[in-house]
Length: 114
Figure 1: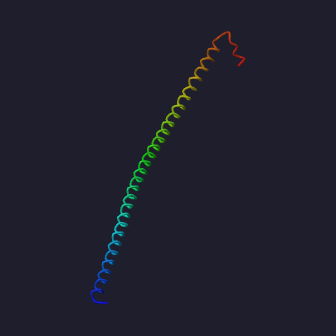
Figure 2: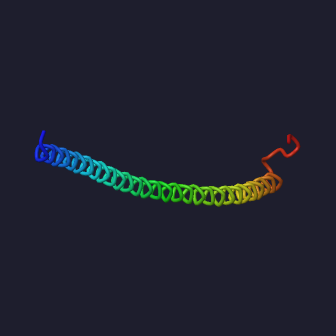
Figure 3: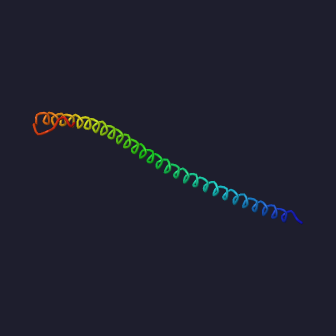
């Protein structure tokens, strides 16, 4: 073989190697870009999940506050109920005392039967 045939073979091999290197780099860049895009999607999903978690935490706090308010209201109503019950007992005792005095005064009532 002559020197110019060797030169053509060497140039052809170099061109093939250059094409292979170009294709490998292009594929590598495409893979990197796909990974970047997937990472961006995951970050966006993470931000959405974080926002949803914060919304749920805020809702839970509101529910807890409502429950505490309901407990305060229930305690207030219980105290009011106790006060009204005590008041009713006082009124009942006064009514019974008046009825007893009326029986004592009434000549038609036999007070010895009690």
